[in-house]
Image 1 (cartoon, rainbow, N blue to C red):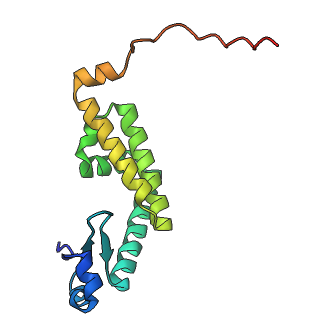
Image 2: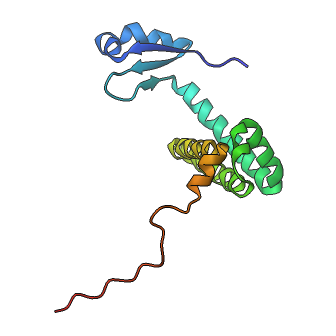
Length: 157
C-alpha cells in the first residue's frame, strides 16, 4: 500500500511566495510548519473528500461488524491496537466501545479530534496498566482516604 507523500515547507515560505509551494500539491499534501502554533496542512479537495468518504465507510462498516459480532470487532481493534492487551478485560471492552463511538461520530461529522484524544487517553491508561507496580498504586488506597466527610453545618446567623 502506497502512502500519500507529504512535503514540508516553512509557513513563512508560503507567505512569501505561494507559487513556490502550491505546485507540490500535484503529488503530495503540504505541511506548513509554524514556529509558534500548530502546523497547517494543505491538500487538494479531491484527496480530502476521498479520505473523509473512506473513513466514513470504514467506520460505519466497523460499527455494523461491532453490532453483529462484538467479539470480532474487538479482535480487529486489538490487532490494530496491540497495547489494548494491557488493559483489564472490562476496561478493554469499555475502550473498544468508546473508540468505536468516537470513530463513528467523527466519520459522520468530520471531527476526528475527540477520537484522537480518546485514543491517546486509552493508550496512556494501557501503559499504566502494563506496569503492575504502578497499576497497583493507582488503585489505592490513597493517603488521606478516610471515613465519610460530614456536611458542614449551616453558618449561624
